[in-house]
Image 1 (cartoon, rainbow, N blue to C red):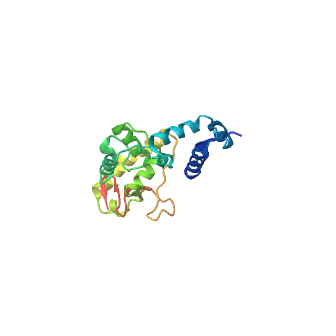
Image 2 (tube, one colour; image 1 turned 60 degrees about the vertical axis):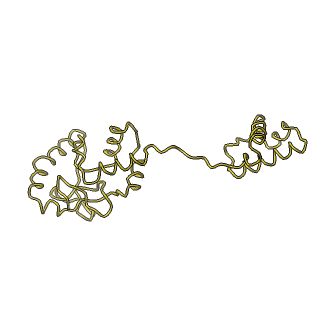
Image 3 (tube, rainbow, N blue to C red; image 1 turned 30 degrees about the vertical axis):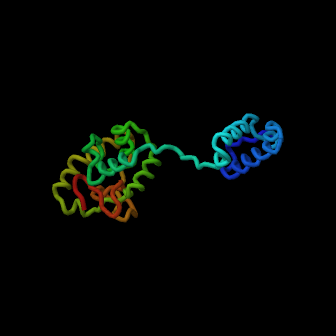
Length: 203
């Protein structure tokens, strides 16, 4: 029965390589040795070549480096600077709170790198940016922000929701139940332990 060597663990593969090469050195035919392990016939010849070039140390299991990160460390820090203390509308978006979808769109716009929302969520957690609920008192303490929200921001959101047949819900600060439209909106992305900006105001 043929075995797919890719399904074997690193440790098992290394053991088989060492045993197989040792048996060939003792006089067994390479084709017979590899057949006994159920592996591809040409595989053992690769092992014999690397041993001739680098000795038995060349048979050691090497950890796969894994998939190359989509963003460099420098790019990740740039994403953090874009979000921290900034408003998505500063980058041409029509929504005033950070979401994973908006972050993904910004990354694709700036770096030409496409990330799914799950990957963006992991990136934000790595950058110490977590979902938060804007504090209601940010509006209560800034009359100008209240006026801007009620006369400009919310009408746009309401029109947008109507166009896509969506519903808008507002939550109280604890997020326990929907309340009237004077309440704070739901969660968005912001630095850990800091309240995000809401409609131009910050707690």
